[in-house]
Image (cartoon, rainbow, N blue to C red; front, side, top):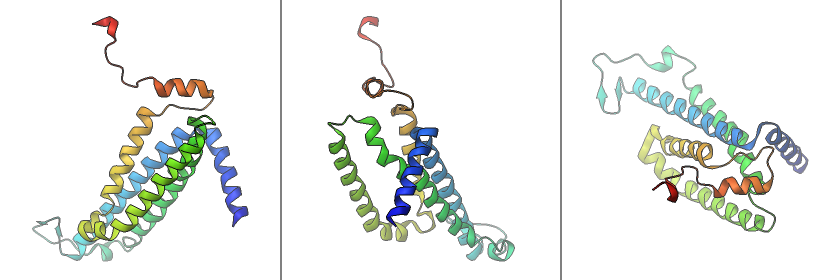
Amino acid sequence: MEDGGMSWAGTMCLVIERVSWQVLLMGGYCLMTCRGSVFTAARCLQVAGRHGGVAGGLVSASPPPLLQSSFPWMPYLPMSCIFTFILSFGIGPTGVTEVLATELFDQTTQPAAYVVYGVLLWTMLFSVGLGFPFIMEGWSHFVYVPFLLVCVYGAIYVGLFLPEAKGKTFLEISEELHRPNFPGPTQGSR
């Protein structure tokens, strides 16, 4: 298992060097949003087909035929979306966030960055694991909507606020991090 993990880590580092971590993060979040949206739509159609046209409180004039009988592949679509959602997470956010601290922080602050990353990661995993049964019970087939919102927010944040690090020195990256992304009027222009 360790050998496979080291091979995966080496491959991920080569992919990050070739493509850039910003593209992988944004691509992973966008793919996760797409897969989660398809999952939610497929679950809504399955529920609408099972309940004779009742979806979200709206009743259609003529109930549609059962979607499972119309499309025999329909029950497999949400499961394949879950697998591709996990794969997209592995391609983007999982593999890149571990390397991100080495690119954005200098050697003196990297240990603190890794501690903050680890604490936030495990706190979020614990929170999702603890709250997911309640989310699933309350949101039913819309269970992926909170995760979709997080993915959209993550893609927007990476695209607007984090600088690209490919081919830049640490000093150039830190200057970009300290520069405001949406500059307001300067003091001289008032």
